[in-house]
Length: 333
Image (tube, rainbow, N blue to C red):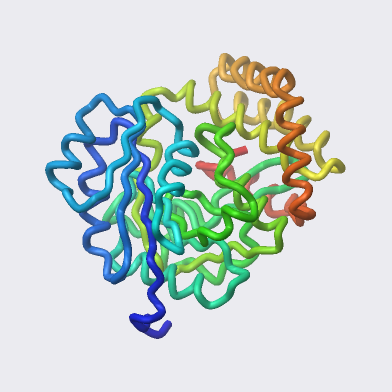
């Protein structure tokens, strides 16, 4: 791509949610200071941290804007708090355990400014620096089963071919048009953490917007630093929000099949082939039951997103079968 002209550099607000991330956010903010893009601000939204994160950021990164929430609002709530005060025409969401290549933001802006129909752009996410192994190059979801997986997971960046048909991106390091919020709303805080990325992208796609991968925009991500010490809670939150996404966004003709697949077939695979504790299946059932209890509220949200337009998710059973047969790790069934 050609270099950005200074007059084509809209203001970007980079929002970094933080919860007890003192051990990682220093490297994150240092990488953001080194961005080559000429017109941006960094906003850290602290989610009630108790590890001294806020104090360290104020002392070592005085130009970074700080928003302090006394409570943990979750990833979605923290991002929304940052979006509300963001001055930028574009908003970049960035995890506190991610590290950006200096050209990361420039590459994303060049792409998103090419067309008003591009609402979300993301680059490739690599395993913690200095790795060249992909964590993902976008995500796909099979609407028939509800299964999700990360494109390119575990392969070398140099082996990544041209990627088409991305269903959604992780919001770990994504660029969004702020005007999109006026059309589809803020991130749904009912998710708290996990699957808010898919929900937001699906709502954007209902309005006819595109999600574009930018292979030249590189980020390194440690992954799940905030939740790695509580695996059972992480599993529960993932399943709770996965079921919520299905109830809220999936076309009715695929709703039943996706729920059955997730409740029965995936549970069998997770226990028999992937070694999940049986107790985790009880957590999954609990997550499903809570979704049934909260179904009236979810249906209100469903009606709202249906007004945005039809969701064009496609069945991807052939690709899913290939991934399962290969027993690819890191999938998010």
